[in-house]
Image 1 (tube, rainbow, N blue to C red):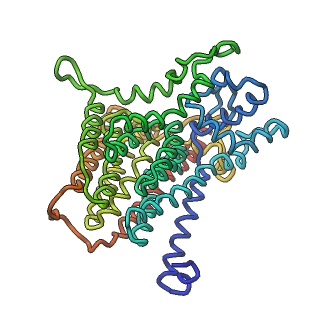
Image 2: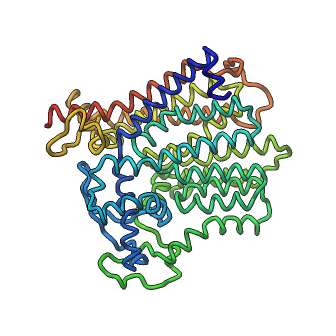
Image 3: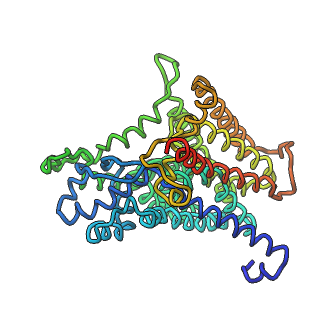
Amino acid sequence: MALSAMWKEKKERGKLLLATAVAGISLIFFYSFIYNDILETMRVGISFWTELFSGNLRYFYAGRWEMTPFAYTKEVQAVYDFPIYLVFAVWNFPLWLLETFGKVDVFNSVLCLMWGKTLLLLFSVLITRSLYRLCLTLDMEKETAQLVCVLFLTSNFFMTSVIIMSAYDMIPLFFVLEGINFYFKGENRKFVGCFMCAIPLKFFALLLFVALVLLREKRIPHIVGNVVMSILPILIFRLLIPCQAVPGDLQGAPFSLLDMFRSTDLSNLAILYTVAYERPLVLSAVYPSFICWLVLYLVCYFLKLDTEEMQKRMGIYVCFLAYAILFVTCMQHPYWLLILVPFLVLIMGQNRRYLYVNLVLETILTWGMIAAQIFKFPWCFGNALAAGMFWPRILGAQKAFAAVTPMTVYTKLTGSESSQGYLIRAGCSLFVAGILLFALINFQFWKKTLPFIETDKKPAWWLIGLRILAGFGLALIPVALHVAGVIFLG
């Protein structure tokens, strides 16, 4: 329904005003916080232009640059694969001009930091559009497609990952959703092309790509060819701009084909996270993550899907499973959870008969994981997030930055950190229980309707409203901690 038509109807006008209010408050919170990780990537991306014009681009990974935000002053370096810095370099070219020729301290300018974070706002809009179009490709009604987008944007993982922690996982996620849309349309070249863009930006996209290829393609040479094509761009980037360049040694990056297989230490750390947990079994120990992915990929390869509808349902389901395995069996950073959300809400749109049950489960597993994250990664919810943005100009600022996190308050109130581990494990247990039950309920080969609560496929708007209020409550945590830091630590 057009906005003008909605405004003419009293009932629809109320919905429009409510949606505008929620969007406005979310936008205020969006520009309230900025996290260390995006600041570092902005600093390196801006420095790309300096290295390019000085002729040192091949030694990009040998560079070290000073970053001077109020809460995060440090020396930084390139730690991710090159394409993400290229995206940030293009977007932040105006900041390089201001810094180089205007002598502006861009990391202590609220407007400059807002510009840097606006990149995520742009991709939030692009992802919402991609998600809507994917819903239509999956044969959902327009009303359902709109609901899926609302569920995505009101997810508390969206609040914590994008609005609070400034997660730029939005960028590869956009290409992933575009690629999946082309996959279901049968446009294989565009499908592979999108994942050739997504995988260099975030290697986790490869987990989905392999599952989708195996689900449709059964010829081994074609499978291998598709996978090789998907990772080819990152191999070329690593060959041209080696990750192992030596700091201070401009001749320390000789041309070598082995550079294609060498990554940065932090990228290697992400790989180590997948084998962080092992279980004693057989002759020694096994990695649960590898076992689960291997089983998933073998099932995808052996599975024969007869109808287009089942291909679409199973395609989204295996994408959900591939990421669910990652987050259930592996170590993770708190903002990574964002990449799971589109597949949760897409399944909810595909399986509307269990919409209420799925919405309850999604809320439980989200709250469980966020509770665990608050105690596992307290600095991700601390006052440092708000220190560089506009709140200090309204509520006052510390003379010298002193960190205040949820654990600071918790320890002050309880006098001990001894229960921290129990709280983390309890939250993770809720998350795993929710994921397992969500996977079970939405299994695509049930022959009969499960005897669960059904609500005529209508969304429980009270629960969606509760999710929105919970999200705003989470966003108030760093603001409240900033106020506490100003009052008690000056």
